[in-house]
Length: 337
Image (cartoon, rainbow, N blue to C red; front, side, top):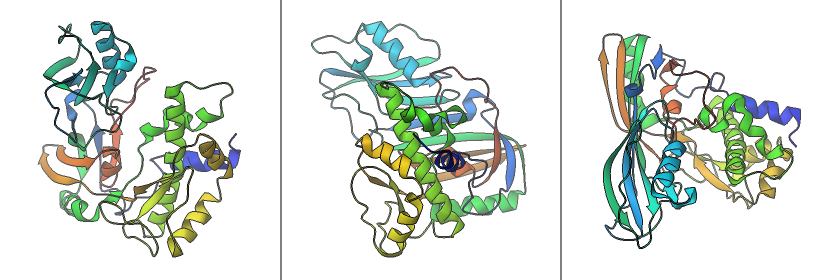
């Protein structure tokens, strides 16, 4: 179980409205996801499909549909188990997204797939291995912010420093589920299904990481590696994703880690009991290929982010943006990449 004190701290770390910003106060207000086409994301694979093999790869553009829903419809259409369908990561439902799916079809020809609402097949190609979770090189975003209220000069100055200064690499609120309920999944009685277990593990690790990063932001040390700290792949420091194993930090970095994680004995015990391996995550999120264009009452912004990072974490360094798609969500719905 999680104590009320630990759960309260983790809920704070899951709340985007209170986490400290790295570049200063919000400079703009507006709305995102006013239309499905306002949020466009496409994933890049870290490899080129070979063109032959037992797995059919489908490059799909989906509009207003959930990744799991598409995977289940594919499995039903070709009469295979859901587990025979692979995808690298979840993509936004209220958006236009392009991502890859794989279907295991040993000894079988390419099937004719039925038309699915909001689903367009862009490409079919064979490969010799299933598409695994996390097999993404990067995600490319094109976002439209409407009802924009800002000082354009100040906002452009903030945009200009993002590629070199970056943003705190917070996990987005979608990692925690509605009302941050995923934080308590591992404390439920009885045996958890694989999917629920994964959500619970991810949420707990993300909450601990976000809280540590928030502390570093408040200390103005989020964008530089401390003494004894392993540098991130994009520069700056790294924080722990808690699990079994030992931190590689020394000196001041180790002191801060020990001070923070000592506050969460229950969460640490839950994660260690699940035997997930301790890992490190960059504290800094640096976009590449960043471009923007102002229109009448709107801003269009495009950029590329590494896998496992959140566009919402970058956007919040610009301003406070209302999610116009926010509404009672279906059970399966999950946002962002």
